[in-house]
Length: 139
Image 1: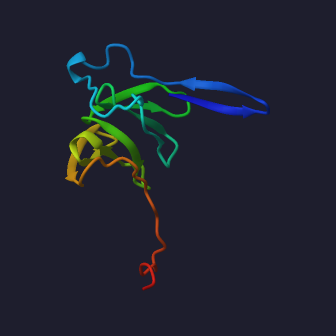
Image 2: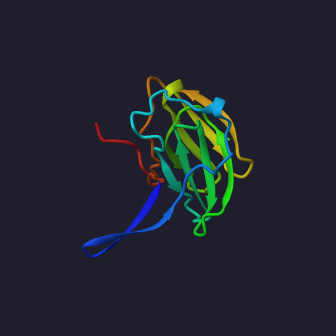
């Protein structure tokens, strides 16, 4: 993954993150559903303490401290796609497109705590915070 910053007519790469060398077993590697996007999903926790990215090629998500990008760990997911987080920065929700699931990851313990069947190829997930008095869409 690369992050960029616009500097007028040019762009400057500020940082790149990739799965650390020897952080995964070749048996975890997948070609299922990569579709030319071996890394497809990144999120910075709301408390700005960590950044997580998904690696569809290695079947894991990877965490780094933020903003200094020191590697803190990985979690086996399957075929991870997009990632979202809870507002309290305690959990990640990861679309697992090859398994028709969404996985819930405990950020502090770096483990999957729940998997939900959600139908075919979940990918584009996000967190929406609704006003406390919101009653839903009008009929």
